[in-house]
Image 1 (cartoon, rainbow, N blue to C red):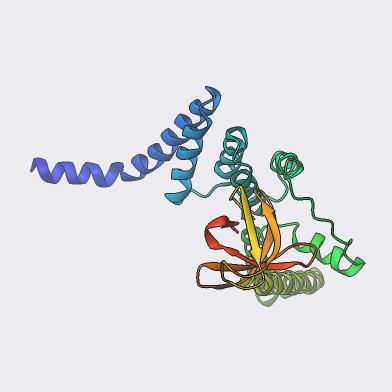
Image 2 (tube, one colour):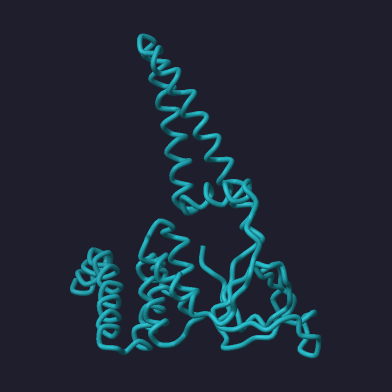
Length: 251
């Protein structure tokens, strides 16, 4: 009977215990950070991420701790991951900007064309998760208004324009989300976490060096062959770097 009671208590208490553990780790990590123990704070924030608690605040705090600990590449990776989840958070954007200024590599890029700039701005207003929620909400709202129009013919004078507006909004939102998903599916962003890495013309250590990168350098990952990743910089230069020198940004 005692064993059965204990199992019942554990089943009822499991949700509370599951919440208490990440809260405890988060509070403990924040205490380490406030005390200047940035490596210990980073370790605890990272343990939360590995346990599945991938929240913008955890990534943001990890970035702060890594930056103060001197791990610039890891800090930019954390800020980039946080920004992908919360693209309108001004604190994340500000700290990411400061960290980028500390990077050794300054990559000059040509300004994008008007169409490309408009697309970037429009598609980055919401995160992928937020965009998915918006498309879902528009879809169900559309059918809810359609149902009202079917069962209450007396209000069709205002429901029909609303249906057209919701249909158009859903079509634009769904199309934008689909294009963004397809564009990002085979291309991931990465951040160099090694102090220095050499990008080579082919995935082998004895090939010619295409360029040298340092901690915090950001790039796109175009492919992988063995232990090497094919990366592309914002200025169009490409090269193969060891996979261990790069960390893929969470999206």
